[in-house]
Image (cartoon, rainbow, N blue to C red; front, top):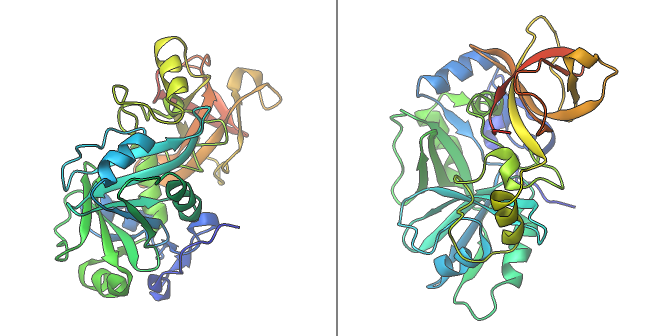
Length: 326
């Protein structure tokens, strides 16, 4: 059984409503979802991601060793440069997604809640003679997200991943509550997820299933480097890239705003022309309510679905936008 991270102290803030499933350890929102979204879009607020797993790799060989295991080119990763990477199965299916930064002495990664133990076990099994140490630091460090444009400072000594979407800080867990109080407002995970969906960014366990390959989600380039050396699952990546096409593709959906409920994760997607009894051609991966776009979703559909075809997500009409080209 996967062990989740400790519940966040920010769940005691006024209006805090706990998340569900793997996100139950942090607040889904603090009473005003759209205000929290607008706060992030305007460059303010602190998102509590303290339920995510934190892995630290130290030792002289850490980058060259990780380079052999990950889909990303990290052997000469400069200190302070953020990247992301995957670990694949022997058949090329996505098993782990890591969000990385090296601070000059330690490579830090945050991962999906509850996946850190399996990841740690795999990394430990691959150490061999390399000068590396791998540790689960989830109990000691908490991840918080600052949106792009945020003026909140980075505490001295804290590792930080800076991307176009904002900054992820690895804070001592004991400092989480005071940092959020000083540099808030606290923003719930639903607001963060709404912007993630808007930005077409896949999430392990939501946009992925047991047979997902990186090409289906647009991870080629951002998390998979096509010119690096061998890693587990590389044969599948190369074969699909050079000779074939992925069986499925990620799409962005504009959902009918007159519907009261959102289609749940796993809800069946069909061609609208075939009606609700038609053949299933995909499934909803994440659905959210956006402060400007209304109800939106990501979905995984068969590659050959026409890019302009109206769809149904369960019974909800949906217009698709291309994320991964067919």
